[in-house]
Image (cartoon, rainbow, N blue to C red):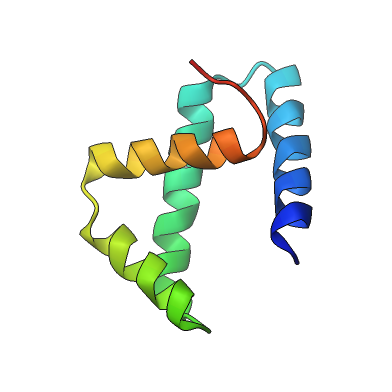
Length: 80
């Protein structure tokens, strides 16, 4: 999946969540939980993925929340 396809899919899922009344904080928590699972159970396939995994593992809770917010922003949503 290309980055553009990922962003389109992400935007659709975020919009679905918003239409269901799911707050930003819940979406961020879900992103953090999913990332924790992926980072613990998936082996990086590229050097870039290995770097992202290392950064995630070094991040504290606040930094992970910031990264989750950036993922939401990738969806083209303007969460404030």
